[in-house]
Length: 86
Image 1 (cartoon, helix red, strand yellow):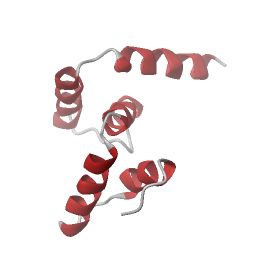
Image 2 (tube, one colour; image 1 turned 30 degrees about the horizontal axis):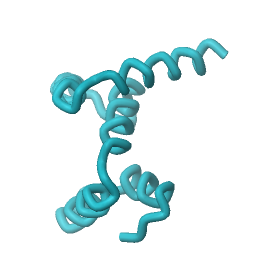
Image 3 (spheres, rainbow, N blue to C red; image 1 turned 135 degrees about the vertical axis):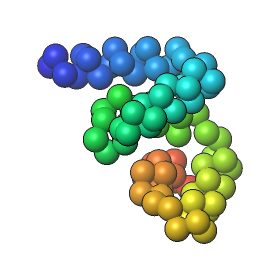
Image 4 (cartoon, rainbow, N blue to C red; image 1 turned 120 degrees about the vertical axis):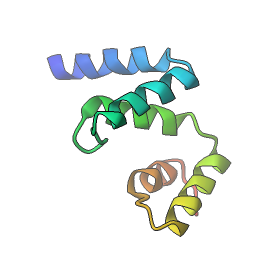
C-alpha cells in the first residue's frame, strides 16, 4: 500500500513538470549513470515523457530508434497500449 501511494505521488509531481524540466531531470540521472532499468525514478520520468508524445511522434521515434539499431521495447509497448501499428 505504501509503495503504491509513493508511486502515485511521484506520478503527480512528474505530471506537473514542464517538458524542459522533465528532459533536464532525465539528463541529470543519465549523467549519473542511471538507466530506466535500474532506477525507478528515471523509468517513471521516461514513461511520463513517452506519454506526452503524440501518436505520430511516438511511431516516428520507434522507427528512428529501430533504424539505428537501438532498443524499442518500452516504446513499442506504449504504442501497442495506444493500439498503434508501426
